[in-house]
Amino acid sequence: MRALLLVAVLLQGCAFTQLAEDLSEFYSDPEARAGQLVVAGGAQVRRLDDFADSYGRLGFWRPLSFVKEKRGGVYLLEPYDPAKLPVLFIHGAGGTPRDWRYFIERLDRTKYQAWVYYYPSGLPIDLSASWLNDIVTRLHARYGFQQLAVAGHSMGGLVAHRFIALNSQNYVKVLATFATPWDGVPLARVAASLGAYAFPSWRDLVPDSSFLRIVQAESLPPAVKHHLFFGYRERGDSFDSDGVISVASQREGRIEAAAAQVHGFRTDHSGILDDAAVFGRFAGVLAGFN
Image (cartoon, rainbow, N blue to C red; front, side, top):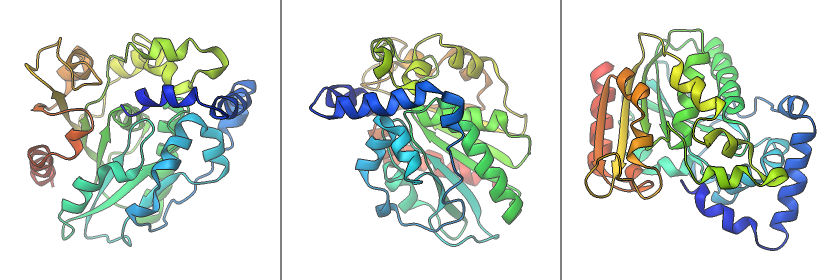
């Protein structure tokens, strides 16, 4: 996850002070701060280039600033078309919808329409999932779509899984997750120990956190087919990794057992979203259920 590299950035200059101010405001009253989330961009059409990398980083280490600027939401990359299946892409920690460029540019636009979820990835993952559920529920009330495919990268896979578990409707038909840390990230223990400087989402990523236990134990609706994509650098066994997330975490036992199919590729953590073979398999998943 790109977020792993951001810890070092936070130690530079005024970034540490800005981080402290932002997080202290959140921790002073988490429920009130969560209430500041506004359903912004729920039906706006944007271009991928509108999502600057700098704001992805802002959403991670100054999440309340991101929220106050009302940058988040689900955005359509073209006007809504009832004849096309919506495919919702969810980025990981510190990322933006631009991380999905390779997939989105190769999506068959005669059959599918790309939607993206842009969210402050420093906030609690459960909160990001709840916010997404609220937005998608509103979009469904507006457009009445009968099917939705969801794709999540890294931490975005956790957001996606939790969102689907929270959703009371039956329009989500397929979930594809890529390099997701289902069993957490050991390095998160270090970041979570920073007290007032600890990102809420890092607390969720600590192995055996209460959030991860919830995700591992919850069941998705029977109609949802989960395709679990994982990356590895060498052998692909449990002791291998994609350079960031261990294969053991990507293939956590309960999540893998519940998946419709597991797809392994020799690639790294970010490269899994820029790999022709991975996209080809994903395109096949979409074609298979649609």
